[in-house]
Image (tube, rainbow, N blue to C red; front, side, top):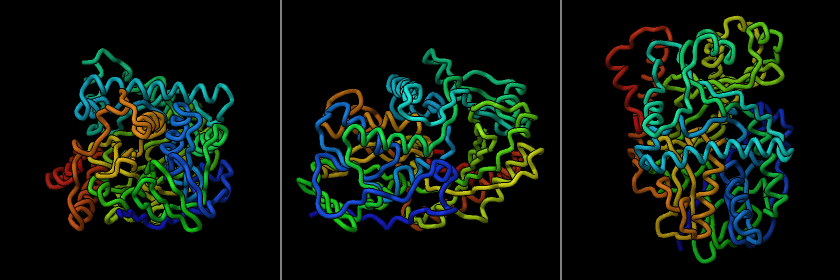
Length: 469
């Protein structure tokens, strides 16, 4: 009998919780599983991917017995810790095209655009108040080395007769992004920002209303493959005909998946509310902004006048295992504060009220992968979102629902299904040591390039050795 064992989950609590979860009043986990239960489909993970999969399953089969098992509270992982940026896959259409071909790439991009409209509809109807503001997504440059980072995506869209990414001028960036440090870029108009935790908690309520059984505070410790599968938890067990692994970075506990996933963290800070100071900058909208660094920098202005700013750190977990350091690393805040002051010099005296980190499941192609574990037709997975999942998770839910239900359609046949075309990563400790070396080089390169200096040849070469780079 094949058994898969998950690592213990270190829950982020107190000050280690993201601003979003604290602001939304997310309470301690409720509804833990006790005793035995059975269902048709057990979904491990109560984040965006798991909840959207549950909702899609209920759309297709309302009588299906769907259960979500979440170790923490819904949204306690990446779904409640991210930067709240909403944009479609049109910005990654060149990467999608290389992986799945032009026709499928365009279909998936349109599907994420449709997902943004679905989010807008959920908010407009009063179903989920997620603070969605479709004021645009800006992809910008603040140094010569960053200029044109978007050119491959623009060119791929143009070949397909699409023009979702339009050029930006410095004044538009200043007015909509709050800074004159970034001076060129492109924008996706039907995109923007939202409150990640409010979305996660809203999806939780919607799933419960549609008959999904939810157990928070219920980490799955092992999966025993079989027909049915048996999922063990600290205080109970679940018998399930089908299983979906939707655990983000925690999926690295599965050896087959760990060959393709590396785990990094993203560091995010929130300032005190300073609406008058932001108004003086002429910054009042809800656009989300990315700066084209190798360790991507992103920010948004909250309605109350806070600035939320995050940056990929490149900090990597050995063998995909991570603990409390991936919830909050206080000493790491300095990088984000430096970038905040570079972009917004007039905010140099504004207090930082929250700082947190979060693990991100990355794959070499920078695009998620879905499928079944080898030799296990009843155990499905969806991993590798690379920190981009708000408009992508509704699409992921469609793919996983089709796989679970055995449908033969455009979702189950998607080029994102299957590990066969994906890049395997080096074994440990080579992977970890190499990642540390590359991370250091990227930091040196970023520090030079934001000052319009040329890094040396060795740094340039090492910094280019990222998976899929």
